[in-house]
Length: 447
Image 1 (spheres, rainbow, N blue to C red):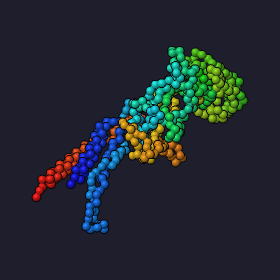
Image 2 (image 1 turned 90 degrees about the vertical axis):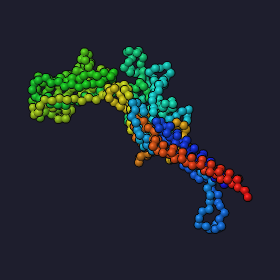
Image 3 (image 1 turned 45 degrees about the vertical axis):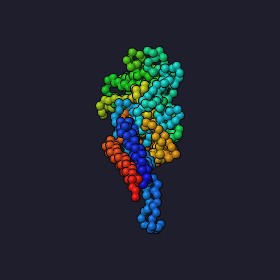
Image 4 (image 1 turned 135 degrees about the horizontal axis):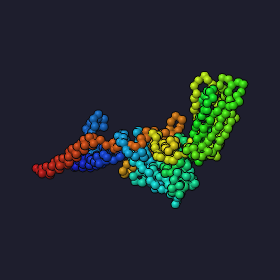
């Protein structure tokens, strides 16, 4: 009869554990990235009763002696994605974990409440400032950084005149491809706060259009980028030559390179352009001009591919020049695969790193480390990256910038579980009192 005591006590203890789990879930309804847990119970060992039917009986003769908490399992259901006002806040839509590091210990979390801290790569040089991507506890977010930028102490970031101090990081290789290193080779993400997009001086200017055949002055202009990141102007002025060929038409041309405001003339070159009887370009003696120290090739085309001079169509003109103006960093963005994109004031972009998204063979095997942090275990296996058909590492989930994953705790389920646990607890306590009454009754029995 005392066996009922122990069965009831085991029920009280097990349901108390279950109530603790439910209470923890409900307490974390508003915790970012929280994954709720559920309890799984199992009966204790059973005791075989003596049966007159022998061992061949088709019915069971076992008597259970209680219950125990077998395991608490994680609910990995997707939490709602809530909007945030910070671009560095990240959420995962799908499977996967962010990696954070503290004191050389790696943790994994779904909480993407990240921000940028401030530090200096070169002690004492304020312009060498960088920022790590960290979470609210100061842990470093892990991923892969590209080596496509370097510090230049003489770089004018546009404020040398006012601050008197030069220096900035300069992008050396604009790209959008960030191949991830191995899952165990990820490092801290560190971004320069002063990052410049390098200037690419203009090397060629192309001109198109129809000069017509009327003896009027024609002009075509285009913009040039100098090696000092100045925007200059190139103007071609066409005047019909005093001496014309027997066939076709000839134009004298003057090329002038000036500063953007027109106050400084950097170069003036003269030449002649000859066109055939159908208006096609035959040849030109104007080859290049000096753009404040950088040579620029003048390309007028050939035959009918560039400039023409004919009466068969209206007068028109257009131009095209290469070169990229330098720019300074305006902000960082994170793309859907975790690539970190730097935006520049000249409208250009480039990747400089990538946030790693880790996966495990068995997420249920992760060890919970408090808060929303988890650690790998022998049951979870090592963190890995998912790969595509070509063997390249992929995120395996959509990285949402400016969003956070809310807790996946369902209040309605939690309150229902609480009622069930409470009633079960009451029932087991009733079992104990009932067995106690039965024992008292037995002790009161006498002949």
